[in-house]
Image (cartoon, rainbow, N blue to C red; front, side):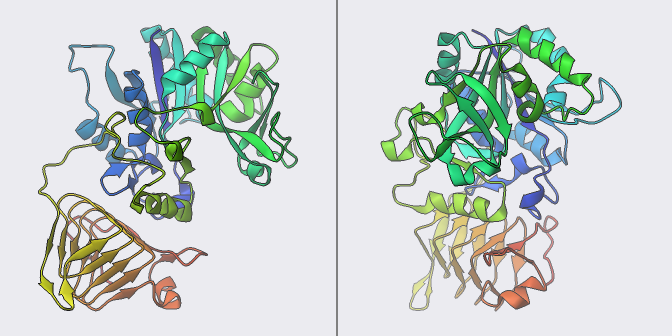
Length: 412
């Protein structure tokens, strides 16, 4: 069965500002060396799905460059193997993408050109591992027209998601976007099935539904709000329970890890999940590699071994090219080519590529975007009132410093 995938990567990610000031949310760095979009693309390729269009729109240049550097496939030898960015082109009408369904509708030519047996529509802004082949098997066995990937969530959190009501066979009979009074899933009081924003479609049914939705007055042209609720009762629509998904090489503690990194605090906590000796998200599973762009950089190194001046990183993730030169890094994630100078301290923080921490500087509970230079003796995260005057500080006290121009040092 040939599956054609559309990856939705055009969102602004406004709640992740200032990390999304200069880039689309799927292009935001994560875990030291990756980008958020690497998770969905790796899931697809590891699942044997190689025909992938990435629909981009908002400030997509860095995302397109990342796809070029890390996801070029086929080279003409296998024409069905590709990861191709598709910018919004206003092929139909005079508007940019008006919603998730409209984004596919405006690119129906790609679907018609490829003539797939199955269409997958997946989001690009979540951190998770998923064997999509298992979802396809579920879809095929149920003879479904539409399958929605779902995840059980506590009923008190249901108002943050699209919630599906299902029967005992997981056939969906209702889909509500952020309901005020959700109902529990069968056999699990206090829990609801939340949509993960990932769908499988019969191609003919999808095309017909998109065409009909495009002419409906008042439609948001959105899969969760409009198109899928309208299909329920007309065609078989099923819920695939992500909790049943298994990845070879992962332990039970890694089962069904999924994080919506839609806010700065959620993004920070997902990065912090990687530090543990036995993390819930295992980046070291060779059976399910996480692919990304490759950059020719040297190994990380730790130098100086004197009292008060010892290069160390404890309970941390340190990427290639980093130099910890007589400083201390604890409980943190360092991107590529971060330089931590002598006598400095970095605690509970995320430092992205090419950040430089000057001597005697102290950093605590911060996200520092690319290319930022922290001056000698500077303190961040110790005086939040002072930090609020200079940076972004979340309600939880997390300090966020935006990206600096390449090879320039920002002035505090």
